[in-house]
Length: 114
Length: 114
Image (spheres, chains in turn blue, orange):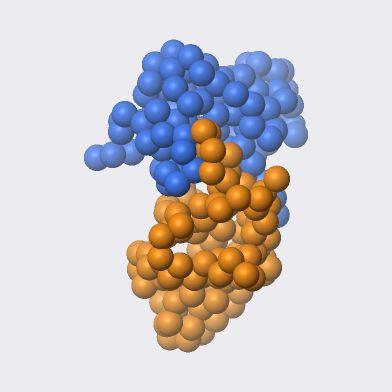
C-alpha cells in the first residue's frame, strides 16, 4: 500500500531533550515536507526537500533540523525542544516539487513538550 | 506572494442539505488550487485539485469546486451533506515554479447535524 508513515504517533517529552520524528514514504517520491498544525493557523511548512541531500527552509524553520540521506526518509529533529513546539506534525510527500502535484500526508505526530 | 483565505472557520449544515465552503486566494501567477479534508485524528487527504484545465473540478465523495479567476475564488460545494462529511477542510494555493511553495488556509470545520 502506498503510504507515508510517521513515528512516533504520540510523544510527550521535556524541555531540552533531543528528539527525532521519523518519516518514510514508499512511493519513490522526490519531494518531502514537514508541517506543523496549530489551532486557527492551518498548516505551516517547516522544511522541505526537493530530493536527496537537497533541503530548504519553509515558513517556520526555527528550532528544527532535517536531513535527507535517502529518498524515502525525511526525519525531523528537534535538538532542544521547547514548549512552543508543542503541536501536531505532519510529514508529506509528492511526486515532484512542481506546484500541480498533490501531496500525500502521513497520519501525524502529536508532540507535547513540558 | 500568495495567500489563501477561508472565509468561515465553522460551518454547520443539516444532513441532506447543500454544503458550501468558501475560499479566496491571492496569487501573482496562475496557481494550482487544492482542497484537502482532515477527519478527526487523521492525516490530510486530497479531495480535488485545479491545475489550469477545466474550471469546474470534480473530486471524491461528490464534492466539486469551481475556479473563478475574476472573483479569485475556489469554493467547495456538495449537493447533499452526509454525516461522514463532518471534518475539517483546507484550501491550499500553490504558485507555479520550480518548487512547491504551498500556502494552507486556516481551515473550515464542517459540522453535519442529523
